[in-house]
Image (cartoon, rainbow, N blue to C red; front, side, top):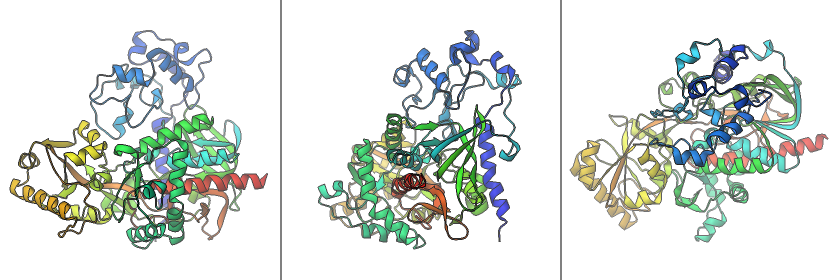
Length: 598
């Protein structure tokens, strides 16, 4: 049996690593050091900080003054000459200070996942930073530090990704005082990177198209996709509340009107913005706007280092380490854990799945698993921690995930011999296994002009340099390095299957478009780790279950930090459903618990 202390130590190491990268200690040399053009132009402390020179964890005054001097994102996007425009990206309008620093060398936040050769004005140099005594704060454990202050709230939510925003908005609208905490310098979590859409059955958008999708079928396909290892009661909640989840998103201002099919599903169930825009950035923008309208207390650079409890299974609040404010306590009647998964934690992934440790991760850098560790420390049970999903189509050697909706729009998977080798709409685990069974352990997505036009995300992949294009299939084959006659025959056979509405070779359920010209495109892909199905055990009320099998009082969880919903393999499109359905349940029940307690 594995040593539980070892597991916790691995997970908590993520907490310390992120804290060290984001937190800087107070030192008198701060005011004496400025980097880049701030230094050259003799910018004073008051120019950026104001008269008090105080900095809150959100760095509110700094960001306000940045925009006052340099303009807003739209202004800067117009001036940006980079091939990749960082001021007009899927991250949306984040804090300027996520990239631009006053006292240390600046760094493009994009490059946590990408490797763009960006030159940031006022970048400064690493040498400038290291020459000064302004050093990172030592990573003391929470027990070795004293809280600087104590606050109170009805509900504290840990992690400002999709689940966190949904839970916070729901609890707020039910009358609770909510504080939403995010350890990273920007909100969004992995939801910001979601590309496909939200699966939902029996929605008004399906009905308008004459589709009569049954939630019972969604239950069956989700269970089958998860190899029947899912908690069936959680899956029923996921499916039967999925249409309400779409209506909730639309009520917030989201566009969920376009429909496409994801792997392992027999109908067009994946709802997304019109034109095929990535669902994640769209939803996070909507969530941020709704949080701002409600004046929700959202704090970035604010890492929860301990969940507080009375020792009898009842949570009482959290301890937070703020980037500038240091350690402080928030007393709360309810806590909702929405801190996400751990697919970006190489050591923890390697502990559970050694064969996956060296694979690339599609996750944002904060997906390191401490939300599970913090819950375990106060007695929460966990489930399916070894179930780590590999996504079949990541762009070559990059961390960019090529959305499953590209295959859903009609693209085919072709090996280095120029031939199809798998049903493109099979489940992710089977598609990944089929690619890894190829001698090169990689493959190509091949598509035509109609498919490209149906999915605006493909244009983004073109901008990122991930797409090869040609005027003929033979020319494309030459660029791919595959036999032209084989690829030509593959495309011709697939187009015949489209015309016949039947795929005799691989029994693909849906062929919405042929691979046709005038342009042809390919994307080199290989599998990479994407989602962790395991996590904190919950019940259908989103209550966290303790090791004694009982619901913990005032403690809720939702999203990728939980286990049981997806079993041993998650279907594409079900993650956003999970965040919205269980985020709403957690928020509503936490607010109700607070009201009853009062």
